[in-house]
Image 1 (tube, one colour):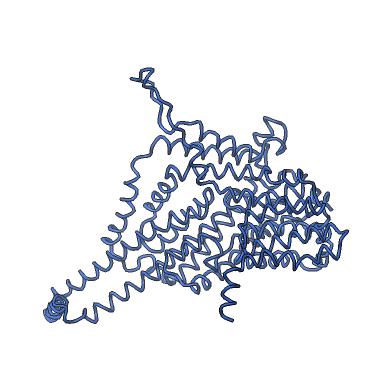
Image 2 (cartoon, rainbow, N blue to C red; image 1 turned 90 degrees about the vertical axis):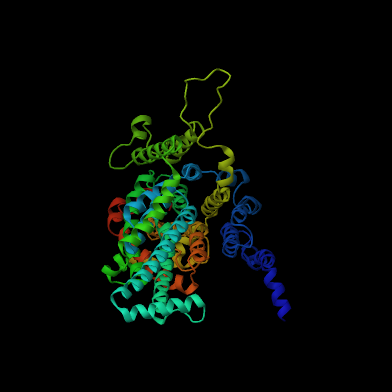
Length: 572
């Protein structure tokens, strides 16, 4: 029996791949003329493949290219077009910026510069690491940010531990100068240690154990604070994490006349305040769990100024190793700032943006994706060194390398995510074409009797739970078309449920396997699963309550949630 179970476990992926299509097959067979049933078959099959990851996520995302034409849902050419939408261009452009920032270590310089300003007191250090990690995650991948910040945190905490241990020993020996009897005890203890005949004194052992326990707990707290703030920070910008772009793509696909309701500026206007609020409350929770609520103790933690200086020197030395800012770093920073400015001013909403003024077409011709690709092209044109036209002969002149080359991009670009995005758009298109979206919306119509805020909270809880054991990209891809159908059926503003659920898909705080930043922190911080579950459960609730507070306050005003928009009514 045991050998059979072992064999099944080792071959579970093959079993899932083969058995799942057969188990779900009665759905289209019993309804041979129903396009809704055929589309439902494809969605269920992809959902199970995505949840179990029996084959790579990106490969599962390609199934509509095969199954939709075979089942008569959509033509092959129409399905294939869905895999390279404007949202994919925005994603590629945002990633090219992130790759350039990482390639020239600009993110590390920013991180260390801010941490040097914050200082090394534990509470300030925690909020410093959380703020820097969240800011960087707004622009580069959550995984890369976590992988960079955790070694810095480990180095600083290790130095704090060493300096405090040494200072305790000095204090212990200094006490002997004022107490001859105590000095005799110290001398005897030292002699015992030297001769390796007796262990350390009981007082010294207890002090050392207390210091180690304190820093073990602090290491866990700092590791969790970094990975959590990476996930939180990614929600603040449209390009910060993949679910945000999936929302934009789905809204543009399902509601073509939405007037570019979701763009970089509008997303930032809603999500950035929500991110800041979530970050502050999360810091308070982590502070309470790992540092206690004694603010005087946690902000000082009994650490003397000489220990502060030694730990501070670790960060200063790391910053010194980076050297002065190079021309390439200034160039990347300039392009990055220009990109953000162009994103914000393209179509801010309260006034006409430069896209409308210059091209007289609001969001129809020039989009955020256009801007992202245009600015990203500059990385392949601008040289990485300051050109000099002095003391060069014609034979000596060589082409200067650009800020980015294709080899670097090819190695770092997550091409699989682009396919995953495309698969989501193909599913949405298939659901609409087959009538499945309309059927789902009508089935969910009884929800109209439940208050809107309760619907939003319940759906956020469902999504946040689902994303703990599934990719956040797959989660949003599966849920958003259903949520859009439900909203149009009950005449609720689609963004009222789609927007908070999208952010909730990034609230994967409870399990190491839920998201790559969690896995990195789990390996770095000597954490147990129960540590992450206890801390993350409360953070999940905090995140859900915060985003629903936002959607019912400033978000309600920004997107006019009180009325059912005309652009949503056109799909009904």
